[in-house]
Image 1 (cartoon, rainbow, N blue to C red):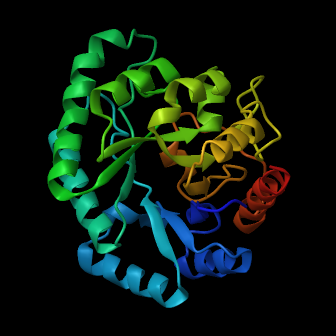
Image 2 (tube, rainbow, N blue to C red):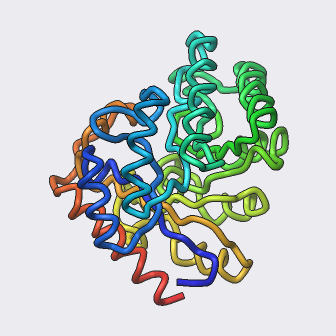
Amino acid sequence: MWDGILLSGFADEIDMDLGKQIEVLKKLGIHHVEMRGVNGKGMVEYSINEAKEIKKQLDEAGIRLSSVGSPIGKIKITDDFAPHMELYKHTVEIAHLMDVPYIRMFSFFMPENESYAPYRGKVMDQLGQFVDYAKASQAILLHENEKDIYGDVADRCLEIMKEFYGDHFKAVFDFANFVQCKQNTLEAYEMLKSYIAYIHVKDALWSDASVVPAGMGDGHVEEILKTLKAGGYQGFLSLEPHLSDFAGFDALEQNASQKKKMSGEEAFTLAYESLKKILEKI
């Protein structure tokens, strides 16, 4: 570990039950969670009063949010935007309640087998509405490079960053997602390094896009983390194992493939141990 680094993770991959999430996080000595799903549904689907109960349990356990792992921007660019904007405003309320500035988000799924170019204007317009609201409400949006969205490869992520980067809009760097888009992560890092404020730790194989523990794939995880450390990166490394089936996986990824059967705790622990080995080396 290096000074200024904090570990977090998507604990819904351990279990959807909050009690189990807390139990395993505490066992591993992790004091933050990137909350996406909890007690059977998405964090942003809860009312403010319901979310207060979740926060109370987290406070009692000494666990804070590193980010709201929201689904904002994870709709088709052709979908109706107005109801999604309302969900986004509620998500900002949830983030304020949970006392966290960061909201993980995306730049809209693109139509299959079509050029992305005709949709650029609409993507930028809708992202702009998110960013304007984030500025007005003191939230910080973290754009994740998810496969099949507009900002899936480094050059389009860079387009987005050049348009919106600032105090309220920054980049998440996700190794595995880039590999799955056939994007070299070293090239992506060089292009995006000045915009990165948050790291998702998962790795993948170039050959078949399958997700593997950090350091076992083609994401150059160790090399990039070493460069981040040398460059003075301070912030979160958030574990997103994707190593076993977990509740809600099909809803989170288009064309979700069958994962190796492993308990959520086993998968999360494996992801943690793999990252720990890398951190001990660098």
